[in-house]
Length: 385
Image (cartoon, rainbow, N blue to C red; front, side, top):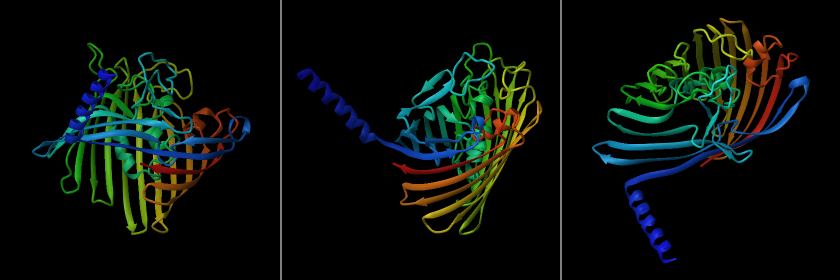
């Protein structure tokens, strides 16, 4: 008992010393919604409880230490929170790749969203570890729904490379989503007259094959505090180094009157190289290109109530043609700065009932070759801490 008390005292002393030098914050978002969707497999309907529909549920720890002279040491650890089941973390991929590219990947991570340490100062900020790719930052600036419904949002899943079914074989994760990259170094410059730039590189860590499973990206951004624009370019390699995934992503937002904000995004990605015959219609194929156009408007009815209308047009070409559209109406009511209730109605329409079209609806429409359209309603609440 005496030894235990001494140990606790020593740990307490270290904790006190650390808190005296650093600023550490625990934060998060807990979001849950009831969702009802028609025209699933066999024309059936589905009712579910889902986490993270307005914003992805998450929890994290972040902190900084003032090193003097304007220099700071920073860290951020952040993981997905599936509060509908209590699970934490998500899959990011693994080294045993198959041609159908598992959505979840072969490994899982508690801090699947962010896991980095770095320095910041007058020169900007450098972070090392698991970072968001630059395309997410670009379309995130002006996404028509402010990244709501992330699981079925074309800007997140397709422009942001978050769908493992489409992009699992590229980048440092070696499977699963490519929206965030392991083993990466990211630099963001300071803003000068509203302009800033960013660069990021992810190491594939394969001996003798420097480009295999790598990520490289550049981005530029402008903002005046209200309006803004961003553009990014990225190139990712598969594990062989012979096939590349390149993509452009950009967005503009502009407030036309105090109550109304207009948003526009454009993104496309192209696969170049020979992968061989895919085993499923969703697997990447030679010279495949996916393009997403997003349009939206926010209207502030009052300080508490905001109405959003959004439209996404998604097209696939190069290997075969496919298309799908989404129309979304979203209402948000802010009880406070931290608590928001919301409701949305989504209508998805594919070019046909074939998989080449319905898969571009990202799970909203049943993919049994019968349905070509579906409607989804969601009612939820979000609390941030």
